[in-house]
Image 1 (cartoon, helix red, strand yellow):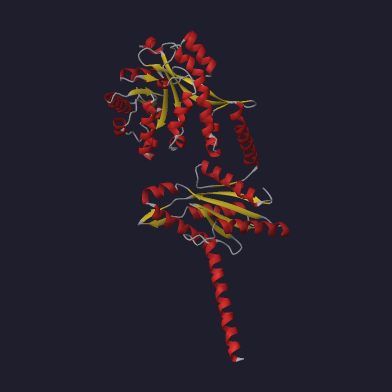
Image 2 (image 1 turned 120 degrees about the vertical axis):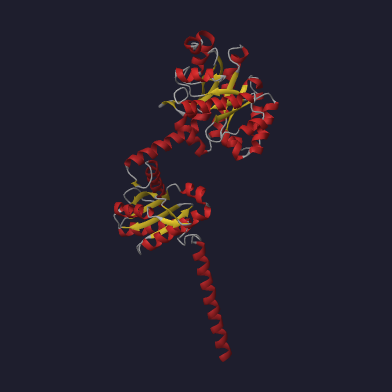
Length: 459
């Protein structure tokens, strides 16, 4: 019997040890390693449980979604380790400041959450914003990141956990859009905005196969003669109820929904079909199309584009593909492969947004880029600000010395146009010459009236 008693004691001890290990493993699986707060998975489960309990008790639950302001800037200037120090400190502050009935969590990155019950949401949000605004010393420097807070309340705003998180996120986005270092609460305005957005998303998915996304065109003129020598292709949405929708309202949404590639392909095919007769009749020389950075990061992008172009009547030598300078910095090797493949087929490649802070003259020397487009932010003050004018003139000189054609976009005033012509800019586009227009209007101008040769008239 003593032997049996010892065995049972050892077994019980082993069971207790295994149970402790299981609890430790479970706790670690539910904890964010950097801050010690519960992680997203544990937070989601707890939120659902708290809503069920509140529903049974007839109480309220407030959810606060917290996001640091300018956190990326901190990482860029002081490094990611400094960012981790700040996140860990914020986690400690949230844990120390949270009441016993509250739960603080790190959802990922610089996003946190707090769940509280039967509290005054406004007063609690004020305290959180103040907490986020407290300075912290990192590497001997006082750092104050600040943060924004979005608030949604059960059952006032919704009766389920998924919508509560979504509504708090919407409120957070509004706070950050207003400048940050503040809080915002979900309300009927945000509810209506959310309904409008979901409706617009559904409409956008339907619009692409329905042919509602159509190409518009902005003339590109010769600087010396004012004659239209090309067009830039732009996307517009002919919504059956809302009318014409600007790309600033649907392109970011299309990128979020993964629809931008389908839009690019539809616009490309429609634009080629519309402009091929203009090129064949000698009305224009160039059709310029923008390419999204996401497409450019696809290793097969240039092959696919060449394949789509071959199915149209537009000559390869009439097509210009516009890529951004920032793409060259992202992946110069992939950019080279795309550019060389397109150039081998006769397709012209233009460097868009040239001069926005990443001007890479070395890339112009090493890559077969035939055209650069000066960004409109540089054009705004040419002819009026002597320093900007000198900068633009030097850029024009450098590009011209490399045998690269220069196009200035965003030309809106006569003084800009006259300066750019005198400085040697080859081509221009902008409201001074013509606004973007649909295909019928563009063709009418090309075939009948032509854009007034404003430079000739003013020169």
